[in-house]
Length: 121
Image (cartoon, rainbow, N blue to C red; front, side):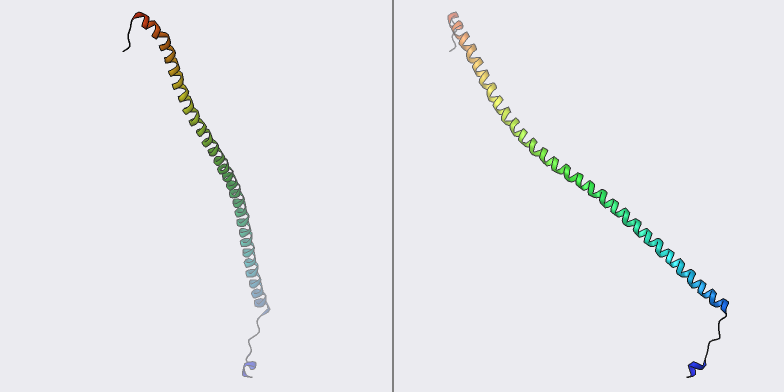
């Protein structure tokens, strides 16, 4: 009951409108700050999405290059095996040709040298 008897003195109309105006200004300022923050966050997410898309394209390119490199390495491996086989067979062919040429030369020269009286042993 005692609390009911104590009253605040009435505020003037000007101070009430000033206080309401201050509250409105603060709310408006806060709301504009929040709005700008939301816009900034939205822009950050758009930038992040763009970066993710670009990185995805880079990853696709890298994956393609790795796959292509793997194919080319396997192809090169086959070609190296073929080159090794060809080298070994050409080496054998060279030895056989040299042997045949020496046999022909000896076959031609032996009778001629024997007629001349040159002995080999």
